[in-house]
Image (cartoon, rainbow, N blue to C red; front, side):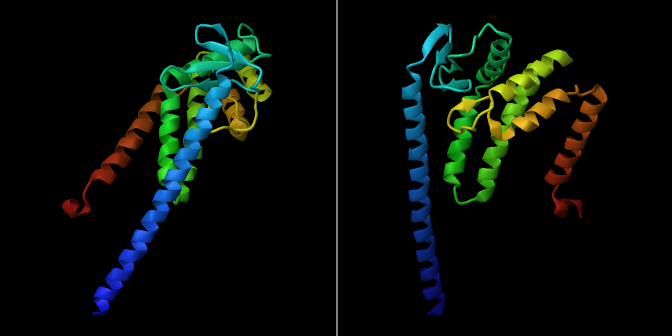
Length: 215
């Protein structure tokens, strides 16, 4: 019958699409794992300074490496006791305390599984950018204007090409936005926080309410 023929044709299309999805998803996950492993192997040559702080002449910007026991690895030219070093360690410590490398890996895995969806890649880019912006805000929350200027200068000094598999706090891709946010930082007032909470609550109520029940 024509209906059975069309049904079988659709089944074959979905089977073929599923095979393609599995192959590409597996390939991207394996590629991500291999790249991360190679990076970890290279960074094992880093020299320990103190506690979980290391230095390496292979880096141009600081990175936080590892998931279970993350290590902060600084460029060999950077003194961790200098003003720039102090600001960088403060930022990386926020990443470490929030377990951001775990969330980063989770975001990468989700994107690999949804490789066919362009919104997944947009989500990953926005997610990584928001992660850095949030850490910036945490670091500068109690800073004065001069300290924020020093932090912004540090962002510019260590800006380089963005990385995905190794967390770097100073990527060139969003450094302009981050510098502007740092220099124009304003604490959220109590009224602003209350208004934002009420707005989000109103949206949540509208989205969670069943239109059929309302009618």
